[in-house]
Structures are given as structure tokens and as C-alpha cells.
Amino acid sequence: MHSRITFYGGIHEIGGNKFLVEDRGTRIFLDFGMQITKANQYYGEFLNPRNLNGMGDLFEFGLLPRLDGLYRQDYANHTKLKDSKEKEFDAAILTHAHMDHAAYLYYIRPDIPVYCSEATKLLMQGLQDTGSKEEYVVFKKNFQLYKNSKGEYSRGKGDDFRQDRTINVFDKPFSIDSIEIEPLAVDHSVPGVTGFVIHTSKSSIAYTADLRYHGRRAGDTQKFVDRCSESDIDFMLCEGTRVEENFSKTEKQVEQDVKDIVGTTKQLVVCAYPARDMDRLLSFYQAAKETDRDLVIDLKQAYMLKLFQQSDVWKNVFPQPDDRRLRIFIPRKSWGAD
Ligand SMILES: [Zn+2]
Image (cartoon, rainbow, N blue to C red; front, side, top):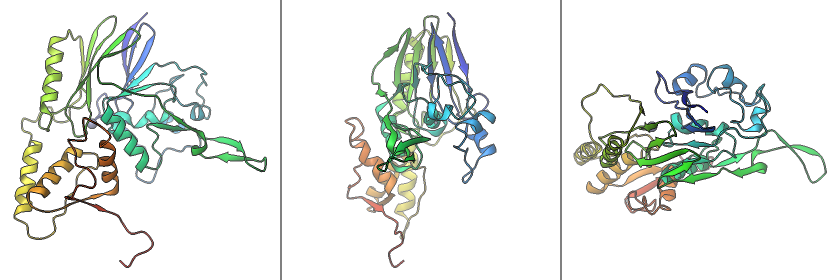
């Protein structure tokens, strides 16, 4: 039986990683992300793929590979794809919860187990609970009819057909049939990013995930690199957006710069940063504390902080949402003076 890697995204582009590793009949995906640049050629903020033809639009534009036994059947039934009764893939293993690595999990069958770190699961939970259509941790079957109390058939909403996805949180090496996977934390702009050293029956693969040396957990990245050098790696899967740069401002330096700016500013300070970049939130939080100010966060960020309090590892890293230095901005809806 063959042993091979097929790249269904993530080549000559940033992210969109969907790497299929096959070994002795076992088939696992490393990440299942959205090809953001390619998707933006067809779609934008107000134009999304149509749901009515399942994944037809995504297949047509080459945004998803046509593979049997991989996709949710409620959608696959609306395309020309053969409706496989059995799943033909054994796992989707995620490096982290960024869109370009995890967003198309939405289209995967719910009986294919997902493997990820605790923080990745918490982030996906947060994205699902605060978003509109995300289905990272709970799968909602679409296009369903059900019999209502009058005995008539109505179109069921996703909420009537909920099913938890199987999400296995890893914290040590694990195997899927002949494939051994060693998860190793690396540092990136979201928490819980994991690189892998993978041993198949034929060869060993290192998958770096997105990693950096200028963040708060550079030591993790170094440990991953050290582990790779000890392992007998045949293939290294890596991407880089700043490979040619020879200077990076560290997150600690960003924090110091914020303190300097805020410390010399008398009035309101307005800042912006990616909502999921919790290390950047931490930089602004620390700077606020040391300059005797409060940091105002939005409801989604507050909810993320609340979720991370569930984790023994992360609850001491990030502040609680009711921390005395934090204020939560709740926008007024239809009521209120101004
Ligand atoms: Zn990333």
C-alpha cells in the first residue's frame, strides 16, 4: 500500500493548508483551512458561496477538492459528489484555529474525528458561540424536513439537528493506526498552536504550523526545532510570510512601546488589534495596568477570556473578564439615548 502526501491547498499561497497524509490505508488531513486569497477572488464581505447547492460553488471554483467520503452528507447530497455512506478519512488534525488552517472544518463529516490542542478547541468554541454560521465544535444538519405538532412537514433549522463533533484534545503523542503523531507547542499569534513530528511506516514528517520567535513563547518554538533536529525527519512542511526578513519587533517590545505611548498621552487612547490575538490583548492589558488605565474590550474578547478560565494551563496566562483593569464595551441596540 502506498504512503504519500497530497497538498490540496497551501502551495504558492499563504495558508489554505489541507495536507492529506496516507499510510497503509489510513488517511488523515493535516489542517483543513480556507484558501483566503483564492476565496477572495470570488467572494467578499457580502458575497458568500451559496448554500442551496451544497458545496457546488466551492467545487466549481476549486476551493474544495472533490473527494468521496469526506464531506457532510447534508451538503454532499446537493452536489454531484457520490454520497458515500461510509467515511473514507480517519482524522483531521489541526495546528491552530486560524481561518486559513481550520475554517473549512465546517464542510467535513461530523463522524471524522478532529484532533487539536485545548486552546484551539476553546478558540473554536468561542468562534462558534459568538459567530453566526460557524460549526467548529457542534455540527448542525441542514436541509432537513421534520413533522411539526400538526403533523405537517416543515423545513427544520440546524438547531433541530445538532450533533457534537468528536474533538480529541491532545497533550501527548498519539497514534492513528500506523501513523504516530507527536504534538509540540509552538509560538504564534493565537494560543495553543501545535507543530507535529509524524512517523509513518515509510518516513517521518515535520509540520511546523505557523511559528515565530518574537512572541511570548519563543522557548516553545525552540523546543520544537530541537525535537525536529533529534528526529529522523525526511520531509519538512513549512510556510513563511516573513522568511526573508531579518528583523522582528518582539511582543515584549510592542508592550513597551504601548506603555511609552500611553504613558505620555493625557487623554483617551484608541487601539486596534486582531480579536483572536490574545497575546496582543495581553500587551495592551499589561500596558494599561502599568500606566494606571483601564483596557476596554468587546463582548467577544470578554467571552474568549471567560472560556480560557476553564483551562488549568491558560487561566493564569490571560486575565479574567471581570479583572478590575478590564472594562467591557456593550453597544446599545435600539434603546438608549445616544
Ligand atoms: Zn496562523
